[in-house]
Image 1 (cartoon, helix red, strand yellow):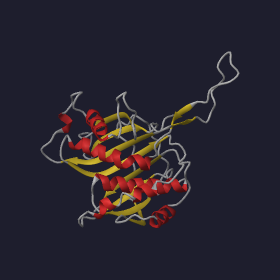
Image 2 (image 1 turned 180 degrees about the vertical axis):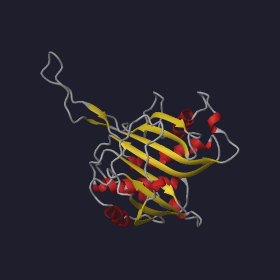
Image 3 (image 1 turned 90 degrees about the horizontal axis):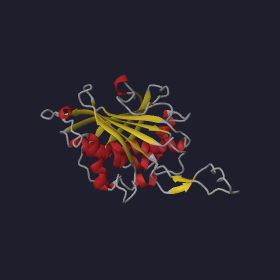
Image 4 (image 1 turned 30 degrees about the vertical axis):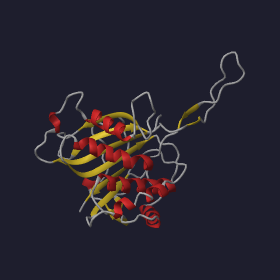
Length: 274
């Protein structure tokens, strides 16, 4: 199965806009998200070049379904460089050999999320003024993690050093699949050993029910969440923006997969609480 990410945004469109009334095939979230991704060089549906970070699958506005959901997007991650497949193809009829199979390498979530979350936020903002309260990422069929991307994430931190004093408190909730048998305390310890700049992770806290992970509405993929302990991780962000939320989620996922690189499916939610 291909590696996929399902990203859902929560919050509200501020009064004065009615995104539920936009139903043209040329003016939906799918077309806005796709165009933004192509403009920024994050993905493409053009035959002239391959996607760089993701392959577009689906996207939809969900504002109006309930009071908190804005929209979602699903993307495929199998867009990296070609690599040999693990299984050698069967010999071709009439020959005693077979060429080595190849496939595209899957891009890892920590690499994709900063651009993916910003792209979704930008696309949603075409339909109204967005007041975002939470983001949830669900990963399916990931390949085993091969390297840490902490260095790349740390190199981005200077962007947040330019932020005026606008700190925001949030909670990170996840299902137990993400931890791969490790504890919330061990995840926090790993995060605190990393240079997270103006992001402050920990301590482990109880996550209220309204901030826990939930199955995505109208998700084109069916996700089965593992039981969760009811515990999560507190985090203070330097600002409440799509880019800051994306960085926090990316570094948490990178730290968790460093401990348990064979995890293939998980869900993580970041909710603003202050």
